[in-house]
Length: 278
Image (cartoon, rainbow, N blue to C red; front, side, top):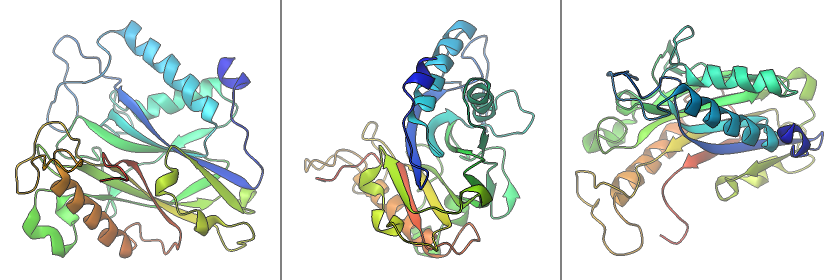
């Protein structure tokens, strides 16, 4: 009821796009020696069923109140198997649809046309997308890791795989659903500084798609190997070099239409662990 009463209002000619860190949302509980992810890693989420339900209730309430057409989620369990018991994004979508008025779906990840159970090859957490199926359909998906990074960056690996690197970037091209072809405007919450508002000017009758790259770059915590990652005292903190490489690689990758869909509207969002004044 709280989620419904405080639901964000969206105009009929407007879409909401939200980047949200779900703070280690894991279906696999951190108990009894459970493992998760691509390499039997320790789960990072709730350590009891009661804690998981409490986390889920808070998250569902928050997401429904934002009333977004597309959510880019960070720090969710890295398991996307259709029938897997560790598929946290599927569980979250089911919980949203059980409470909310709109029907959400989740993006099935692919890399270069191949279905992927794990988005990130070396981490227990990952990025993920959910979206209102009444607003959009998925036209193309791809994942950027070291295995398909543009050639200009192969001498600088690792960038997206392995300890101390950035998490894999997932890009999705969404096409406006038949029922909502009259897109004229869009509003981005929590990612406005990364959003090209000019691509969504009112009166753009041709706007029917958007490609979104969801990134989670290396934090300023532990120091990554490699030159330029030590804190230089200039305000950027640790790991500026590997974040810079990731941003350059993502930009170059996006130039090649990695989702296989030629869409002129491109958005980068997520947690870049970097700030305007750096």
